[in-house]
Figure (spheres, helix red, strand yellow):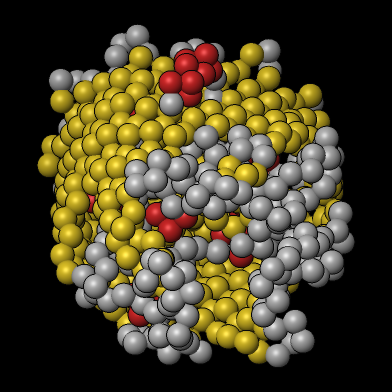
Length: 621
C-alpha cells in the first residue's frame, strides 16, 4: 500500500471532472452542476463531500460510446470486466467492492436480477440514455440495500424544449459485422413534453473464449454474436399550479451467444417503467410520489438449441419523497421506499417473493457561509432478515481561494440474494435462510481545487466490509460435498482517487487515476478480478468543423480466483476518434478502438476485441 500511496502523490496533479454539460435550466436530468442521486434531490455537487461523475448526452456523443460498458470504461473508481465482447456478461466493481455492491436505478426505479443481485449493463441500450450519474461511496442511508460501493442512476431521454419536434438519427457499422441504428423524436407542446425512440444493435462478434480443459472445459472456436432491439418513451406535463406528472418506459430484448458446454446462448428481455407526480403543497414543501416496475427475463439454451433454463425476476417499487426548504440554508428530505421482489424460474426456489420497506431522512445545510453539512439516516425492514439502520454524514468547505477540503463517514449494507437464501437443494448446492446482510463502514477525506484553467480533486478512503457471503462446501474437508453460502468473509479496501481537468490552447484534457488495495482480511489475498492501478487520459479539441480526440487507458494486473493463483496481466489501450460536421444537421463519426491491437484479457481465458473501428452518420434537426 505504501507504493500505491507514493505513486498517487506523483500523479495527484492529474484526472477528470464530472463531465456535465451546460443545458437549459429547469430540467433536473441535465442541470450543469447539479446532481440528483447523491441526496435524492437537486443539489450543487460542489456543496457535497460525495464523489460523483456525470455523463450527459453530449458526453456520450462526443466520446462515441456505442455501448454502456464502453462509456463507463476508464471512469474514476470503476473497474469493469467483460467475459468477451459486446453483449457478454459485464461486471462493475466500484471502489473495489463486489459487483453486487452497486445499486443501479433507471429513472429512480431499482433494476437488476433479484437472483444474481447484479445488473446486466451489457443489455442497456445507450441510445436511450440522456444522462448517467455515478455516485461513489456508501449510499444505503438513502437507498437501502446494495449501495456499499455506490449508485449508478440512468436517466432516459427526455422531451426537448422546442415545440418544433427534434429528430435524431444514427446509423453505422464496423468490424465483426457490427451494425447500429437508432432514432428519436422529442419536443414539447405547450406545457407537455415527449420523447419516443427505438434502437437496434447487431454484431457477429468474435470467439469469446479460448479452449479450456477439465470437467467444465470448453472448446467452441466460433463467433459469438449479439443483437439487441430497444424502444423507449417518456411523457410529461406541467400543470398551472406547477404540479408535474412524468411517465417513462424502456424495453430491450435480444440474444447473446457465448461459449459453454451446458448452455451457450441466452435470450433476454429487460424492461422498466415508472410513473411519478410532484406537487408543491406549500411554498416550502414539495411532495413527489413515484411508482415503478422492472423485470429481468433470461431464457438459456444448450448448444443443440434445446431450452435449458429460465430466470424471471421482477421488482415493484414505490417511493414517497417530501422536500422541505426550512430556510434558505437548510433543506430537509423525508421519504419512504417500498419494494417487493418476485422470482419465477425453472429452479424451484423455496420462496418466490420478499418485501422491503425503508424510512429515511436527509438534511443539507449551509453553515458559516462556506461550510456545507449533509447528513442522512435510514431504517430498513426486510422480510428475509429483519431490521437494518444505516447513516451517512459529510462535510465540505469551499474556501475563497478555490480550495475545498471535505470528509465523510457512512455505513451501508447488502441484503442476501434469492440465490443465497433460497436456491433449491440440487444435491450440489442449496441456499441458506439464516444469512445476515453484508455490512460496511467507509471513512473518506479529500481536497478539491477549482481554478481558472485547472480543476482537480484527490480523495482517500478506507472501507471495511463484514459478514461477506461466500459459497463454500458444507464439509470443508470434502470439496465434493454440497455448497452453501455463509457469512464467513471480511474485506478491507484502501483507495486513492485523483482527477484533474484542464483547458489550454483549445485542448481539453482529463486525467483519472484510481489506486486500490482490496484485500480479503481472512486470507490477506487480493479480492479476485480487482485491479490495483488504473489511469485514463482523454484529450480532445475542435478545429472548425472537425473534432478529434483520444483516450489512453492503463490498468494493472488482476487475480481471477480468491486464492490469487490465476494471474491476469495488466494492459494498455489507445482509442482514437474524429468527427466532421457537414453542417448544423449532419455529422460523420469515426472511432478506432485498441489502435495498437493489444492482446489482453479482463477475465482469465476470455478474449477481448482486437483493433476495431466503427463509422456512423448522425442527423439532428
